[in-house]
Amino acid sequence: MIELKHISKRFGDLVVLDGVDFEVRQGETVALLGPSGVGKSVLLKHINGLIHPDAGEVWVDRMKVGALKRKELSRLRSRIGYVFQNGALFDSLTVFDNIQLGITDEAASEDEVYCRDRVRQCLDHVNLPPETAHKYPAELSGGMRKRVGIARAIAGQPTYLLWDEPTSGLDPVNADIIDSLVEKLDDELGVTSVVVTHDVRGAFRVADRIALLRDGRIRAMGTPAELRASTDPAVQQFLERDLTIPVAH
Image (tube, rainbow, N blue to C red; front, side, top):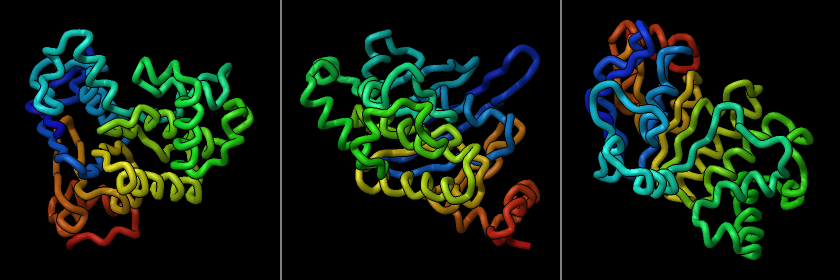
């Protein structure tokens, strides 16, 4: 379970998060919606301790993230897979080597047979053929690079997956492929997921619950049906950007 309690964060004079409360229950997928630049990725990075709040508490598996020592934080991060917005692959490494970096168990990462099998399994999970392992990122399409980034995020068999704008920069066909992978991996791996996105349609497709971040606060949170029925003008305005999402009037 993930709990953010009264989280506040500012950068200089810019208040990004202003007393945010945010909860993700075990086994569910929560999409965090909001316009670009409102702090969605900042909130996400609080979960694994990449960013620390100015005020408030972050709890994961009943552990207070800000109070963890270095080794404890490292162990927690080994259970959290992070899918970066741009893939964040190392261009000088093969796909195999990039995915192997996601194997968080030190002994397993040094076992050649295990690594070969695990990389093949991860490529299969993201619907890429085994021969992809021998390619370099520059030889792949944008959609394939995104999928390799996902394969690396699941290589350590995480409990949690944090998705930072997974469909950003993709055409509609590849965006649908990534959305399908979010659903597939949640089902197959049983992970708990937080999906940061500005893609309204994708959020309504993959999420059990959806939160709308606006003006530094969670403006609304609920099931897709509850958000569709919301009479909050801010919620209506945001959802109406995607005409495929009917809203209450």
